[in-house]
Image (cartoon, rainbow, N blue to C red; front, top):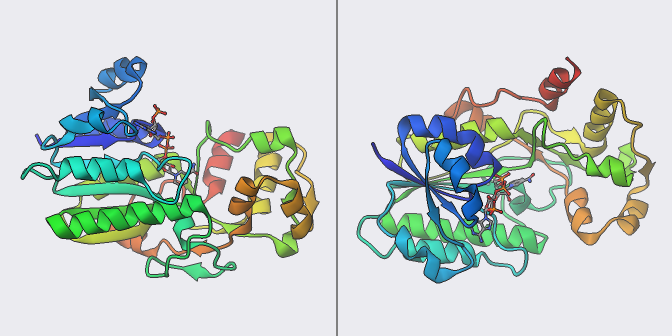
Length: 290
Ligand SMILES: NC(=O)c1ccc[n+]([C@@H]2O[C@H](COP(=O)([O-])OP(=O)(O)OC[C@H]3O[C@@H](n4cnc5c(N)ncnc54)[C@H](OP(=O)(O)O)[C@@H]3O)[C@@H](O)[C@H]2O)c1
């Protein structure tokens, strides 16, 4: 059995694990020893290391045939030093991974003023958070080209699931933008993103391939929150003109709210078929109503 190294022992990796252990011997990088038992019970072999501590990564070299990388860059700066450390370790032996699957974000596109965009759209990162992701993508491309390693980048929009809903916005009563000025966004169910990771790891194609790892229904942000409120029986959140919302929310939240784009998932549907069990948020909302 081939060996898969998971870097980023979080929600998506955990959801993918039952499918991954059918095909791979799975090693999972953990920084928290307390989580080791959970992963062992799921069939993975824990390897304790911290992406922020270079010397803890020395055992990564020559370990795996493939890597699933789902850890985010750090919270500051405009680069991803975590990934840089990992790639430099992986390159230290002749036995390199033949395939890397990486979860990026659709934030790398920046604001597209509500336009449709596919994977060929130029990257225009407008926040440091998105710049760090662009840096990560660039590092991976360079590594893949230099070492003839297959690379899949999954650019995910907002991830949601029944236990991953943005309920804090209702608690804080954060206002939404008036419908006629609202931004457009896409979503991806966490289980669908996990299925996409599994399918991408199973691909046999070489080279570099990028996918908008998105559902099929771009939505005005306020429509998503209205649907959620109606489903959960909450009052809808207040609406305000765009300029007033910007004054009332943190710069970090505004950087999410301000960007508007419609992601095309045509390539994903064609090349990674069968992964989207939640083609629209309505599928989950219907489940929540039953
Ligand atoms: N939230 C969204 O809507 C959204 C949208 C697009 C893309 N994404 C990205 O999609 C990816 C997968 O999402 P997810 O929900 O699975 O994320 P998650 O649950 O937060 O998992 C990320 C994992 O990375 C690990 N990690 C972070 N820093 C580390 C370090 N220094 N050393 C070792 N491990 C470290 C975390 O470890 P600990 O468990 O120890 O904290 C965590 O388990 C993430 O990169 C996320 O940023 C998220």
